[in-house]
Image 1 (cartoon, protein in one colour):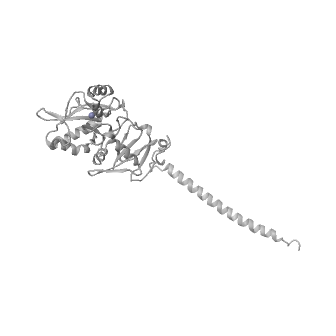
Image 2 (image 1 turned 45 degrees about the vertical axis):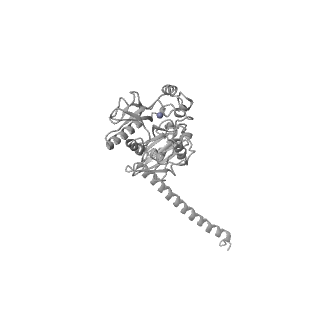
Image 3 (image 1 turned 90 degrees about the horizontal axis):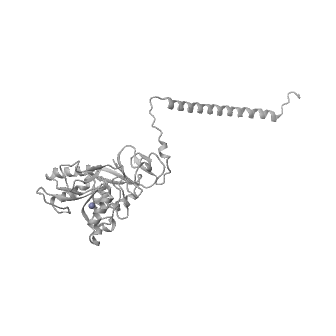
Length: 333
Ligand SMILES: [Zn+2]
């Protein structure tokens, strides 16, 4: 009788052990299945010859911490895929929007190539001297504008009287120009002249009979074409008559400055000057850009003030420094 006796507690223990074993086996099967799945996925990705994997460009984003926006590599707003590039790859003194005024000095970077206008003389504009020069972008835009002018009116009377000036030339110009104290309202000291950018020129109108006169708004029918249309070629009137307190120069209707489209159109249509535009654009980021429409073309423009410059991955774009440490990106959609 004693041999058949099995304590209740021993029987119970055997039943519990079986349950635990079943659970352990089920868990083991689950883990093995998961491992097998992960191994299959990993190997199929690594070995699949039909898939082209994009290069790992994370290194480009690790150069510096981002302070002006989240450290992301892809954004869909506003439908533009964005890439962050360290700002050291750009030069804040290069581009069509560099600011030079009485408070902001500037020296043209040595990397910037100038076009001598006499060597490259264009049939649709004339020169006051043989030594005028501009940057390539400003020269190309000037040619396009003068071609359009000539096409519409039969003759383009535009004469470039003063393009790029280095510091020495500006000093000479300043010393000759300033006779009375009041003259200082129309000319900058060396290092502070818009003419150092190679993006600016003064102009006169030159008629077929050899007469020439200073350009002024609404001076002639031909000049009015220029007033209406220069913005479409990337030019602004750098010193509007009512902005002397901001620009430091009283109205100077013969001083044109290349800033590029669409900036030129926005500046002119809103009656602001370059200083005001560069302040205004700081409110716009790549996630919430300024939208500008020029004829049928749409653009997005934004400012980058941190350690990264945010540029589109696919769309056509320009980047310009502002000579103040920031960058402005313009994207054509
Ligand atoms: Zn000028």
